[in-house]
Length: 506
Image (tube, rainbow, N blue to C red; front, side, top):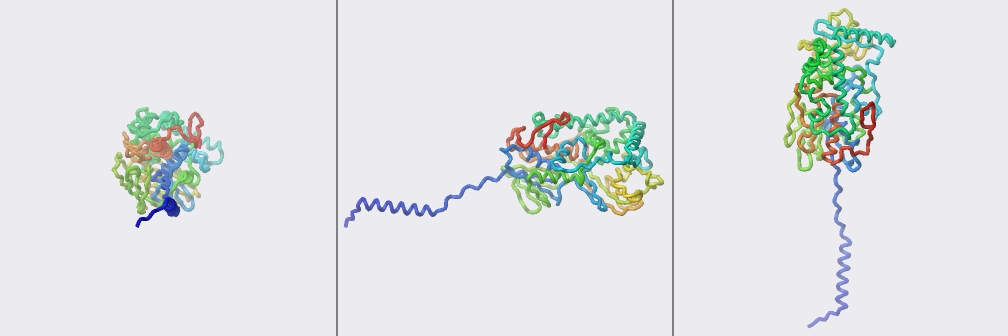
């Protein structure tokens, strides 16, 4: 039997099939869109002044084309600030770690303005003229006058008398020392020049040579001062007292660290009211950062285009850029592949805070009032402390003191130094590198890619400001090497001149 299909029936069948296909396709969901690309992540290990400064400068310097990145900061402690911390002694708050800032620490000054922090007036502006005594273990080899008065002319008379006493003992070598310090500070100020005239440095050595500071890291402070013909007595006494207080070390430290230490004895020194740690806290808050407290990073592994950071909390993070902003000397971060840095040890300073009263008999005196308010010591391994200073005078028989020592002070030692102690607080700081000239430096770039190390600069000198200077350079390195940002491109700041130095207007 033959079936004949008319053309009309064929056309109707085709139309029906097309309609069925269209109805089926209309019910299918559209193919999923690809997920949006994750923004680049910069991970910073350490929430001290180095890590917080790095976050700040990354935000400040990033151009609109390269501003879409996340910043994570990991801190093993439950607080930020690193080696900037305060201590509560009987209800009074004192600096326990990094304590003083120099009047030419321009980044710290700018942070203070940016964050609306309050500068604590330097001690030289107080109503009293604090006295200094240099103790050799048996006697005070040198003492200045101390006189508590609200009268400005009395303060000036006491200051003049102390200047005369100091010159009589150490001579005009004091002028040579001042010239050496000011020359070093002037070279350091080059790091605040405009970015148009200042290179991005890929190594600490390159950074130091550009400023004319490298040679100071190749010799000791003692040899450098002898070379410029400072009085041996000045080096043995006053200079040694300053280096022991500021770095817990002798004049055998490297020349640059020594010059920075001497600059820390200048006038006009200042701090932040309520604690210097507020700089780190404020910068982190100001920089749109994901902060991970109580999270210690135990390993950093390079995996293709990413770094994988694993924490002791069992968490894992992927970051295109990883930065270590804490000293690697006493942390146990595992790197894959391994990184190579020169071996160094940290100088531990033991800060002991005592509310009580010094024992005048320990110093061969018959009254507490005759003990200088700042007692420094010469280099002698038998001396139990580096310095003792009065932090607060409650009354004539009740004061709060701060003692620096290289070793912990046990109760027996303290009981010989003090006639009574109402409260004692001990803090052990891995405070700064143990300096050995000629210094060797870890690289800023640990793996040749995008793993960076802020604290490499500490082998030159360790201060809050040098950490900020190092972090600023590494921020520029990251923006240039990873993001491809031109060195001077940014919409977030403008430059201006201040006292002849070009620097960023925050």
